[in-house]
Image (cartoon, rainbow, N blue to C red; front, side, top):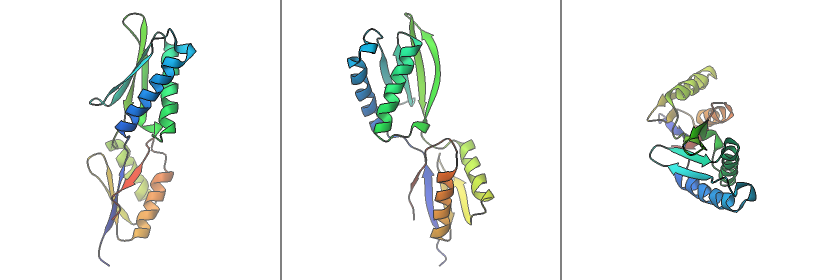
Length: 165
């Protein structure tokens, strides 16, 4: 059996689910008493892949983020892929925070994953391809062991495994 098997390790967040979560969170914020005068809003910038939260003060921005994270978690979105920025003062005595949405595996994390696979002495080869990690090997069992190893590793990303062939 000379055929090589492979799979792709990716880290993706579904933008449609993010948009739905924002809509549900905004409905909840509009109805909650503690947000009545907070003028809180959550915006999605799909091109820049970031969320922008605004409110009257820093505590309301944090509370709006908590509501949003709760709605995202209920929809099964990986919260590891959201990198919270610092809260900064905006115009009109309001507070603003940007949350970066991470899609894809950064090169430094991919190199860390490759080193981890080599340190585990698994009989697989890994390569970086367009913000994803392609792992190939001669045995499906070796690939299953590699998937288990990557799932158990703490790389700061939520990994999905696709294209298992």
